[in-house]
Length: 186
Image (cartoon, rainbow, N blue to C red; front, side, top):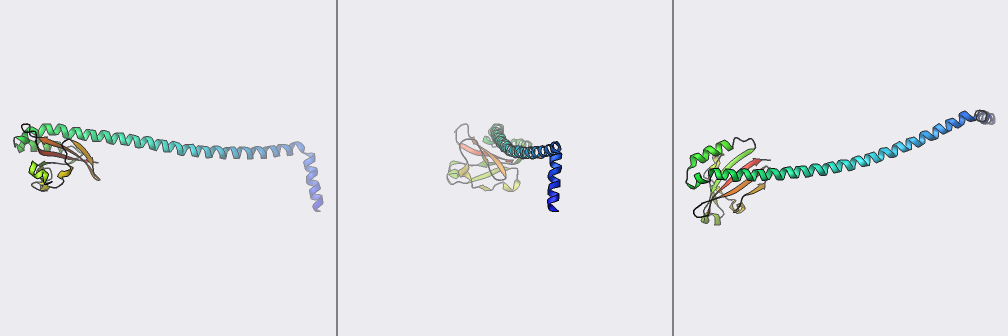
């Protein structure tokens, strides 16, 4: 009986050669295209991941450029503001300085502004005195981080904020008398 089934199957195939050949060709082509599609999908995935990596590199580069431009902007803000309050500080006129600081602190990205008074003796001891601060509890406190202060304007990025610092010099003696420090939101 099994032999009859085999013979009948073989007879059917032999009698219908064209149909059988077409079915075999369709099966082979289907398998071929299925494999090709899988290969193309895998290439696409690899190319997509490379494109994503390139996009991430470009995005990081743009972020770094933006951050560096932001730091330059903060440096310019503190330098310009120094010129606005410098003469009043040298002449010990605190109320115009307070007015200007109160106007500047209204900027949304500024956290705090303070002025540290120093003289050569205190600077050597690495201690200064906060003579003005937008945070009133800081007034008259000692400022112990004098070693970080320099003779030129600089910007320092901290964990929670960016701090721009500039020295204020007495125009007659050329000595640094105060430091203007502005803290910006990150």
